[in-house]
Image 1: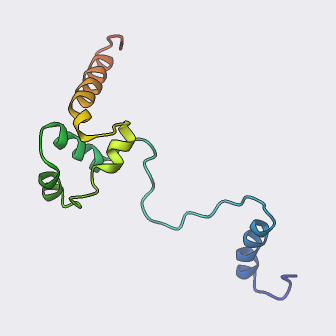
Image 2: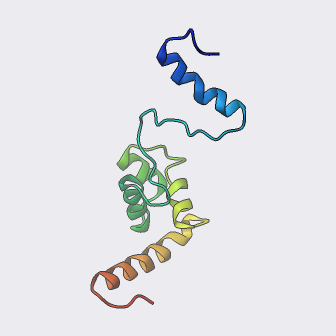
Image 3: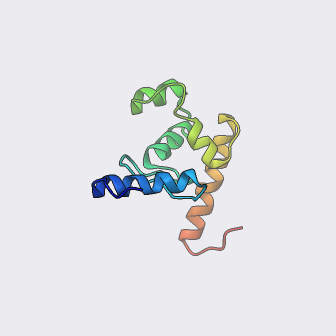
Length: 108
């Protein structure tokens, strides 16, 4: 079927053909930044820290050169927060638990 093609084309067409038959073949990583999963990136952590300190969304966006409308959505989702108003309490609780666990105290 692929006998007359150069090797590079053979290799590129085999996964496509397998997918057409319902076989799962993962797509290769083509570059760009790797996702952080459910953990906050350094940038998202900076957003959360500023929000917990009382900065408004426009202030955070201006300080970090971000979109004023979308920079809080991913960190909120990753932390399980529905609104920005839940942030200071939740962030303070998490910081307290982390500090206690680093000092060897049991975390409740």
